Length: 97
Image (cartoon, rainbow, N blue to C red; front, side, top):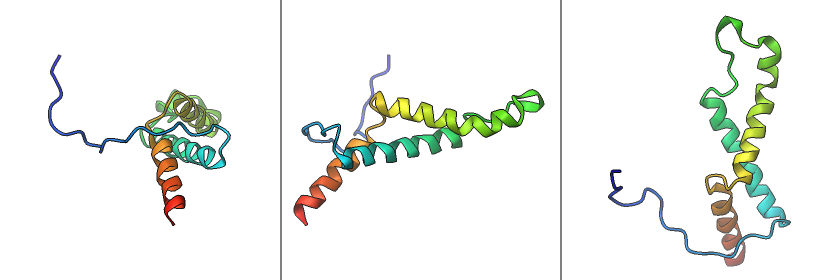
């Protein structure tokens, strides 16, 4: 295995208290991350028809539901950390201003 060297591409995030799962701000941050991931999956081609013998118009119409469900599962499994960063950034901004 090749060791990773050099600085981390993202700044270190200080340890913080986990958000309350019922906090509306936390729910909004998770929804934003879910939408972001869904768009990234779309840009990556997830759900696109594969040639002339794909699933037809039905596959095309329901591909967005597949992407949304997969993005939702990604967020519930921990996501990419976007929701947590947004939540804490907005929470800090509210307390400072």
